[in-house]
Image (cartoon, rainbow, N blue to C red; front, side):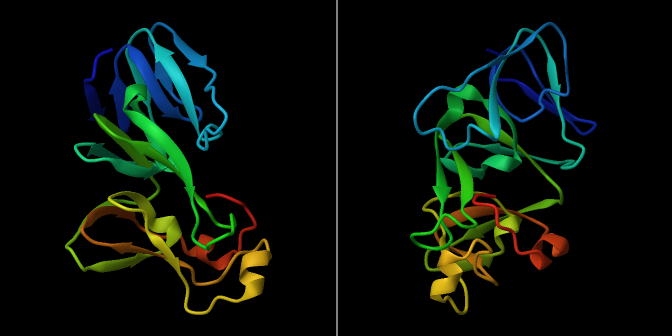
Length: 203
């Protein structure tokens, strides 16, 4: 597999190899693009990412998420699975559901973990990278989180009642709290999503 990746004109171009790609990718390809089943008992990101073997150059892009961010995985990276566009399949180390509310899967975020090489994220808004020093805390709306290094964030909301845990709407004003030292990638938030109380189990 060639590790070269080119980002140009809104597309990510990769060569022949085995890749972890977002649903519906690649957008275009030479040769063949063979989709393989992802096997295993606990593959949390199976519904969001596909395993694709390509025999030549392929181009990946999602017009609903046009902003591309290349993240080198010099340190282990936790990336929101629904925002992953393409990464070498060999760089994936696992996946998990990060719960914003303890003991509840409501509003849990599906995360794919990468331990080497790189990952390209596609987002609706431009991304920013924030470096937190030891002792720093950063609060982020869940829909703004793209990726992070270090330990998982904790969930926080000003007031949490028993109904917030039990009802499918999930709690209001919920935030992710990141604690340094770590690095966090963010994108702009969606006001419409903030106004709607979703009953989905995972973002």
